[in-house]
Length: 399
Image (cartoon, rainbow, N blue to C red; front, top):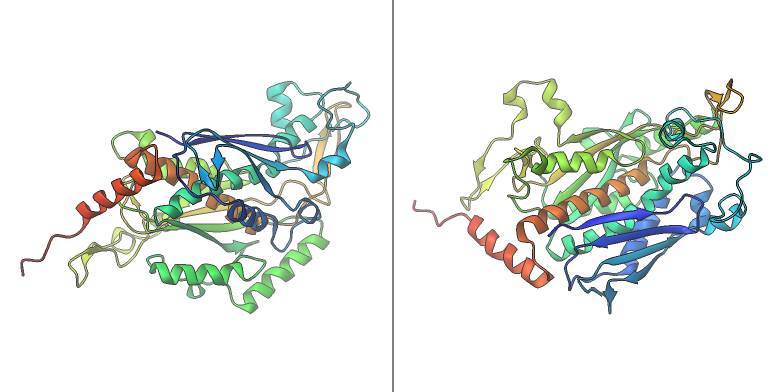
């Protein structure tokens, strides 16, 4: 049994649709929880005007009854309120004209790639679907996945670790092997500010100042986010085939997010700079004779399989491709050099990116969970997990 989801919809079309298949019955699902994540995706210092306009809300169309999944396909819809301003441009039926055709591709966006691949005459057909507006649909799908994870005791968190080259000092972050209580307290601190970071007030002020300066300069900023899944049982994923390795699946899912250009598991980037004695996480016994890891540089995964430590995924987001002061491009109608097309844009969406990473990590973890404990109902999944975790418990000490 493998949960999967598909999305449909354009940035300025009527809305975004999500279809989720192979999701177990009996999972408590709340529109309030999903709407909270949709709001988190829209917030953040450096966002543009559209986020104030949309106020995303999910609508359940199928597969949920009386607050629980039924086992049938789940259909969700998120209205694009801005669609009302695009009549005539985004009509599903009508006659295409060259009057408002978008023909100057933006460096860093899918505009020119779409032109090549689909033989487009108006690059808006690429812009509308490749737009990061689609991530609202991913967050909704991730909200469904989180509901199942939460029912199984797993929480997925995120925070910004770097924005525009300004990093949150390591001393201001919890250890990657912190307890559940410590991680949840940390997340509350993250959610209390519009940068979604745990940095000191001085660090936050430095980042906001840099965002303001970048806005004045007509440019954009990228950054780095970290997603942590706590209470993930050991043994999810597999090392027996390349396409079953969980770290590979996480990397693919997170890399698929618009503007994400690099992904690391745990402290993966550190592995290329230090020797093995400084990278690998020792295996020790605690006072209850349970196997523990004093560190978690592996990010909770070894050999493509979870090892019981928190699963940690980092993503680097490039600066947004739409610049207030556009870079040079080529007009594909006149075949002359001109400035690239400009459309309403954010200065940065790194805080929002962290929420989208949460969603994609949650979906992949649900897929791995169902691969191991795949049943048709939540109760059967929970029973399977309890039996499995009882087997993993350390045997009584003979000392």
